[in-house]
Length: 257
Image (cartoon, rainbow, N blue to C red; front, side, top):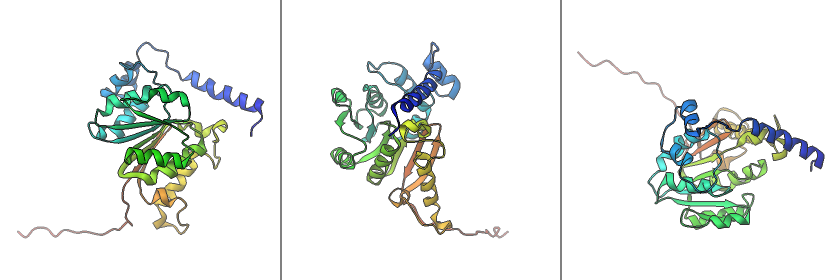
């Protein structure tokens, strides 16, 4: 455990960086439209109409739409790790529609107050595999996981290793706020093995096991990981059946004259 004085110093340094990036302009929607060229429904849903606090980085909004739009209007089973003030769950209900099965989990007992028609909330730790399995069983399975929880490296890893095997084929697993992967206070650090991006690199190596002799280190994830997408502070994993790669050569004879 880090000494208190060092923990305080790291916390001041990281929170100062967050303050430096806080938006101070008059129009959140305009900032997102102008910077990212995005004007979809989720922009209006995020910036208007929720009585509950929701906190998002601006560049996340078009990324969410990129990966989650295909689930709109469907009975998608959507699990968000981290409830905070309940605003995010409200946003997902408005975005995904009435057929979506939306659950949120949080370790804070106060978040139970947000359990209701918009989303079901269960109290427990994302670092507890048994709890995670019980929630997914109650949901009847899971199609989308959005990890916006503690942002601690060990917790993120436990959740991924537990939930990705339970994710439906064709499902989406997103981890956000991964700037914490570079912060010692969250178990990360530049070039440290505990940095979540180090685990991502090992999964990438597993996905290419056909081309090297080192074997797989995370087969429970990599055997069903068909793609990994990296964005600023976000990693997205696609779950699909994978196949040993094959190749062929084709030449087509010109049609007879």
